[in-house]
Each structure stands twice: as C-alpha cells, then as structure tokens.
Length: 57
Image 1: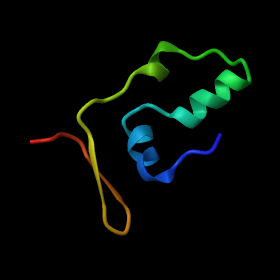
Image 2: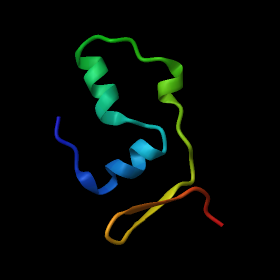
Image 3: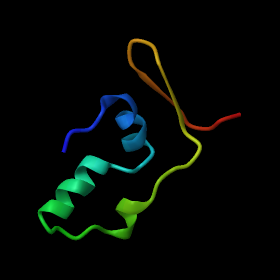
Image 4: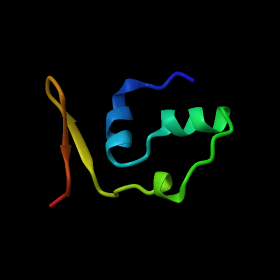
C-alpha cells in the first residue's frame, strides 16, 4: 500500500505503525495488543523536519 507522508510520522510516533501492521496482516503475522496501543493528544508541526509535541497545553 502507498501511504501519504503528511501525517505518517505523527501516526507512527503516536504508536500506530500502520505500514508495519498492514505488512503483518498481509503476511499473516500475529499482531500483539501492545502494537495496537497509541498515545493520544500528540501534535505535529512542520518546519524543515517533523517536530512532535508530547502534550497539548
């Protein structure tokens, strides 16, 4: 699958590695509950690189 790069870094940093999960599903590799956890309320802003904000104030 092709993923848009715009929000992928935030998604992966928040704990939802969707490309890895899709690959595991396609290869019939079990996915653990730990891989389905995520960190809510993260924000990403862009300059020349991604900056992850751990908590919204």
